[in-house]
Length: 261
Image (cartoon, rainbow, N blue to C red; front, side):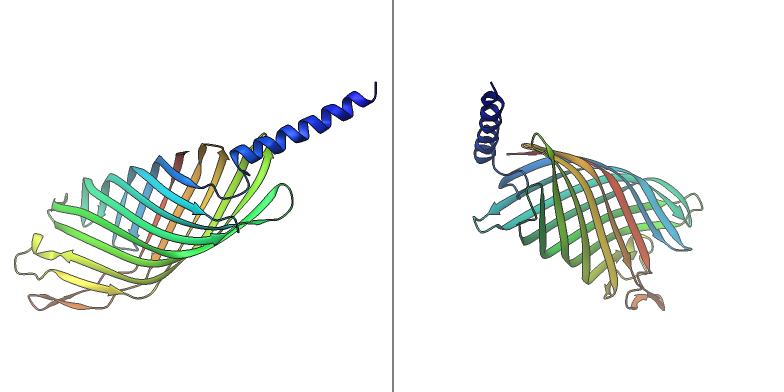
């Protein structure tokens, strides 16, 4: 009679190992495509000068290639749009704001026991932002279009913790090493006497964090992105004026769901 529990345990272990072999180890980076959506709250601020605040929605996509050695390569894309509230020289509602982001990273999976894995990675990323504040604020100040470009190097770590029945808790922390930024301000939108100005940003920092739940084809969770960029260089703007892109910070936090196939 005592042999049956032992046999049952052996059968369960074999069945579990077989399932992992068919579906893949949930602690390892999953190969294939991902598509999903996100909702976020966005806050951009130039201290003591201006703010842009509001909600936004977006789409995400990725493809990951893995090798038997544990190495993986991942390409990611993100698009996010919102209509924000400007507060500064007066106020302005429903300011269109678009973010597009593309990244490529390479990393390696390391199993740290039977229920935990570590996946460090590094790569290169590009972030594009378009903001259209044309029109007039509540104090009759004229706005203009702004184009923002960041080049950066993401360095991060994803930890996967098996919770049972293939459910995985997957926190990620990442430092974004700012390489260079280019800001084009189309000042001629506000005053035909002004030049359109392109400023260069050389100093800044960024980071992001995710707390995701994964199971087979599904992944969902919360995330936050943060940037802090210092003053740019100074460029002539026409009419005897000069322009710079002032020190600013951006915080974007939200929820996300992905389907993996």
